[in-house]
Length: 233
Image (cartoon, rainbow, N blue to C red; front, side, top):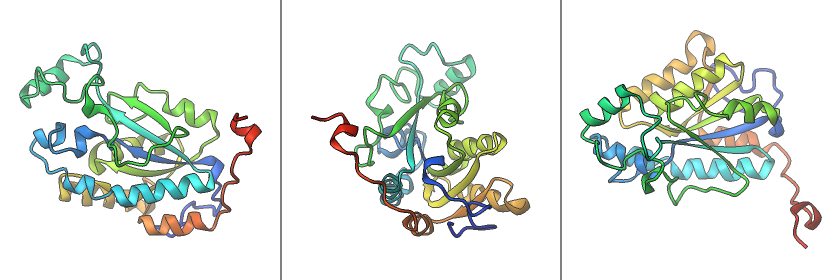
């Protein structure tokens, strides 16, 4: 189990790597770079970049025990066909009209280069704050028998928390990793983490990356693929 509050995770003591996924939400250039969407909106991306070492450590440990790693990316089509009038208005109001910020055709849409991404990871692209809205994330999770989700990424109060809430409503067992999530607003970050634990864990449990690493270390390492299994000759 993983030490967490208000209860250790999972609640039933059954931690199985094959039914668990690590969600790494929106660690893209547009959020972490000094010239991306987040910075242009007046926020300091430094706290977001600061979580990369913890996230990468979690990714490596997750892979080593067979926990699926799933990255998400937020952005719109280059032709803006999937952007509503309200979203276009907000974009104009933020001074981003005519830019390639948050567009899938732009370099800012890509995951940051110092994030540990493997060919075996799954990438889910989205337009909304929740990774479940208008995506195939839930279908992927159900198809793979994944029932337990570990949350990391940015921002804690928006995309992480929106995805977390929807996951709970879909009866996934959720664990938020406090120091592997970040926001440009410290008050909002702290409040979002606090909300996980209210009402005896209404949005699951809350922990830190070291507790997750310790918990995953109790699981056996995933056996490397044989030559025939890997498809190599």
